[in-house]
Amino acid sequence: MSGSDARALSRSLLDLCRMRKLTIATAESCTGGLVAGALTDIPGSSDVIDRGFVTYSNEAKRAMLGVKATTLATFGAVSKETATAMAIGALERADVDLAVSITGIAGPGGATPGKPVGLVHFAVAARDGRIIHRECRFGAIGRSTVRARSVVEALKMLMELARGPQVAAKPRLEAAARLHPRVARSPRRSAVKRRRPPRT
Image 1 (cartoon, helix red, strand yellow):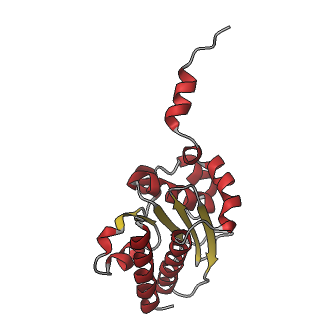
Image 2 (cartoon, one colour):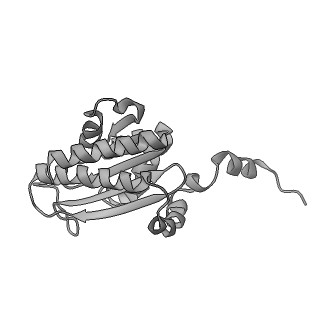
Image 3 (cartoon, helix red, strand yellow):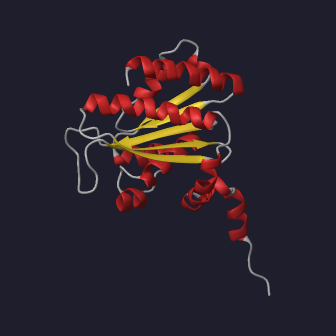
């Protein structure tokens, strides 16, 4: 995977999103904005790219993306649950059609039991409710290589979602809706229900 791979993927993704009138936001931890950088490096990307969140610390994930402290405490920053929450948070805050998140351990340090260097979690979320999560274990291949390969993986996942409904993504939607009820139902509606006094 090289910079030219990321550039070619970025061009293809932007063309597809432009054709389908889709907008994108990114939420990045270990890649530090490299996905947003790859996309905005292409001239004319402003009609597709809305914004990028670089949420390196846990506090940033909570403050900027609404990741719950309990999610971070229970599963850790590098987890399926946090990656999914980051993608949904970016989708909600940016009001875009597609969002991608990346959280991982690029190395050389940072490994913990069960979470080795090179472990990266990705999630992409679409406005229509589709969510895809992917876990990659790149190994201790060097910090810059882990980050570069993560960018390519994130772009591929955005392409997958931008192309249209994916059969493989449907079973994941139910689980994602349980994790994040706001994706499945309006918070305003549930608030009205709570306000209604019981009548007997």
